[in-house]
Length: 268
Image 1 (cartoon, one colour):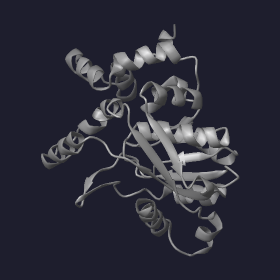
Image 2: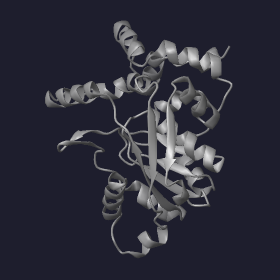
Image 3: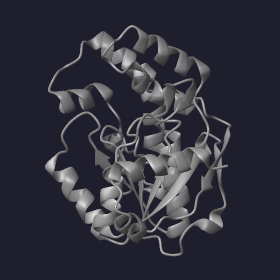
Image 4: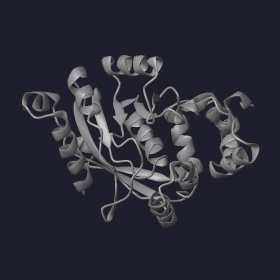
């Protein structure tokens, strides 16, 4: 039994915000994130760790994922792998598995709430997308960047939504450009091909139209993960961009950030 690994969304939110949610809201969130199903899986496979756990989760959902242009991956895994973020959950699990299986190890920047999945903590680096970074999170990131492991990132910080007439990432944050230069890591652009259900994007558009502050669609992402059951995805690898090219170009981090975002969305 691995009951100590179980997810309890109410306790996790209280620990993060310092506020205790009403019981009815906790029950609703438990259903939205499939807490019972996740905990059943954690009890059964909690002894697995990192890449092995990611693989088992994909197998459990009968999800298949494959590389396109795998030969473009650098021989040396000490690089920064950046991707669009179409699904919000299973794309991170899939890329952690693919890169970890290819290079033998991986660390992935993820929302700090996902860091609560303990068997994945060995491959996840927590990032607070809603505010200032915790000191321990910054220390973990700096240690990872100084090391030799491959590091993966979703520069958008959030999964793709419907913007400007298309389903796409929001504007990317340029911090990954600075990280690449400071740690002397080449950048490998990748495009994860896939999208969430149509009702996910419909709910998001209605929710934003009315200006609600609570991000309901983020709460829906675990449900979207379970909706990928039986599906197949692909990851298109682009040509690596050397950190020296970026550093010596004289162009700003934002210019390079926007350029690489465009490259990723055009990969086919």
